[in-house]
Length: 348
Image (tube, rainbow, N blue to C red; front, top):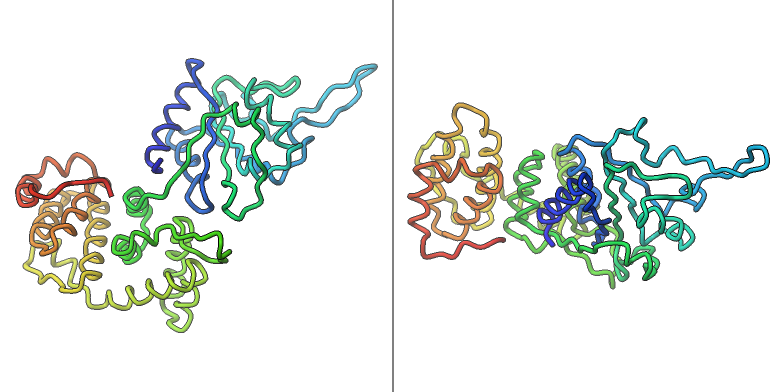
């Protein structure tokens, strides 16, 4: 499933806790696809805490607690990291990350916690959802086979990278528009991991965010920029990104486009993708401004002029993902839609 679908699913699972319909969820996926980040975004959307337990780093007693004697009885000290209504709030998400990397003794300690929402004398507060995540076998991570009794305690979903979802996320996170343009031009590089080659650096949604950071830190040191980009996303992807960025110096005046001036369209496809990504970012920036309606119109007009109509479709589609229904109400949208009516709009 694509990340946006997983996000919708997890939000529904969280609200289902309130009426007793919640089922623990297990998220599967290769490294770097954003499993953890999706959970943090869901928790943030509800304004609730998220407790992130990295099970690969725990011992069984870290979950079960430590026994201590009271008179002739032995009781268990409940770990403070487990959800507690007084300390953490009545609602939240308990995230059991790296479940498949946890030793069997630790995963066994989680059996009762996951299914019965209890562990000895401890009970998970009623308003807390339980979600786990892990890498698949074959991803070259440290993984253990998930025992059938534990696997049967979850519903299972696999996350697949999706360029449209990533572009929407990146546009709202102020990711460098040149990097967004590059991945729109080369979407197959959003995730490119071959476990058989055991690479150290390779393209993933997470490592492209690292590449964005490298651009901000080292762009003014040209002799280091290529190496730092390659350190994030690997030799091949880093070299392609550097060449794309160098070519962006020939990009037309985006400010003039936003003012509605008659700006020439570059012949090179990579430059057209770069302009498209920049315009999407500017549309997001303008959402709450008085000029938003005017800016949307000028961008739609520019999309109508693009000779490669598929790029125009991509531009408007990503704008819609980013700003939503206000775009559909703009009169220029109808003009653009008529021009591309013979093209099939599809999910990228």
